[in-house]
Image (cartoon, rainbow, N blue to C red; front, side, top):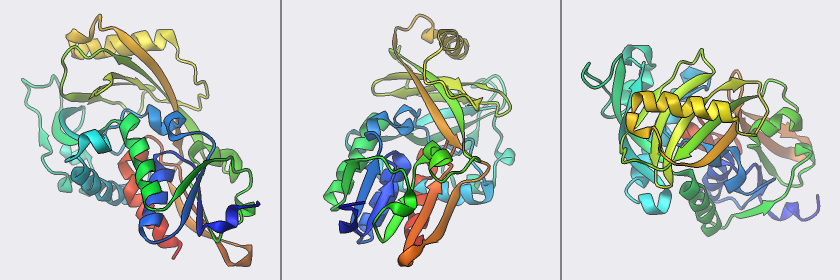
Amino acid sequence: MDGAGTGDAVVAGGGVIGLTTALALAEAGRRVRVWTREPAERTTSAVAGGLWWPYRIEPEALVGDWALQTLDVYRRWADRPDETGVRLVEGMLGETRLDSLGPWAARVPGLRPAGPQEYAGTALWARLPLIDMSTHLPWLRRRLLAAGGAVEERTVTDLAAVDAPVVVNCTGLGARELVPDPAVRPVRGQLVVVRNPGITTWLTSVDTASEESTYIFPQPGGLVLGGTAEEGAWSLAPDPATAERIVARCAALRPEIAGARVLEHRVGLRPARHAVRLEREELPGGRVLVHNYGHGGAGVTVAWGCARQAAGLVR
């Protein structure tokens, strides 16, 4: 492809995984271009609720370390929330026990059981990064540009044909057709954003065996209510009946949500896979292709751990 050979690396995909990986490469001294089919503001990452927490991602043995590395980064960036979009916010993880989590949980500061007067069931209190993706994604892009990287709206149709010494595949759900990898599948998530009636803490109540879940995330642009996890569903159109059920479930936990004015409906397709694919592949002519996709519902949670590993694979 003409013009591509002027950079040391091309990262395919401009969501949170692609931008973070590109930034890790740029900060390691490589010249990087991101080729993205659409701007970050229109990727699946832009729809994300933004809570740091491993959700619908495998394998657990690796996810914990990736997530903890990312947590360390976000905790530093939380000092500048208006700039980075990252805040540390208290909330409760409903239907969650410490002994049900992996060893990584012992290294998450401040996790503690909620008392019966705080939650009608088993829950954990936590102070976790809650990331406003409408601020965070443009900030990542600006930081990449400041590090000498570039972002181009350009569709990759053949990874092996990209004329660059290093190609990194961060195309998420697009990897299903691009690789092709039929193991990548969509898990549809629908959200409702309402005017915040004054809620300052987040709350999740998630049953991974169900297509419906409940979560409440106070973001600067409104209160984000969720959600769904519909396996194999491709529709990006908000479903009005689903939206009504989301609001009703959230209002059952926080009654002040009932009647809150709806600001926006969102739908995103999580790029799920039986395990994240993070590996190196040799291309003709001594070129390198690194795959970094399949992060399910936890791309923002593992972004830096995976980006650093991907960057290490190109050395």
